[in-house]
Length: 115
Image (cartoon, rainbow, N blue to C red):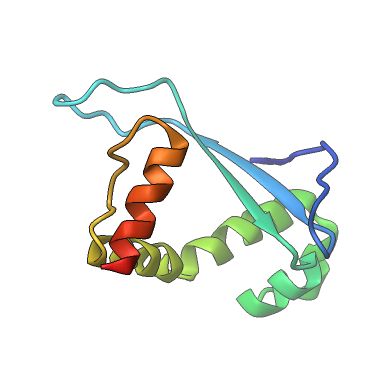
């Protein structure tokens, strides 16, 4: 785990980007990739994250503990947003992309919402 150091433009508030990497779970049925990666974007300050998790405030000074706290807070939220997005896509029948061209896919989505 570590912080991405690149400049992020286009957001109204300052954004922190945490990059996570972990080894795959061994599965005999699927081909395994060397590592899995994820990127977490957040506008929360370290003190807010520590407070929400109920950790001692002196851990704000420990960078490793703060990084771990961000990932723990993300895990605690339960993925409700992703589930809602998936459910709304399934409701209008666009759970996967069917057209190669972007404009054609947009038309399929618009026709689906119109129906």
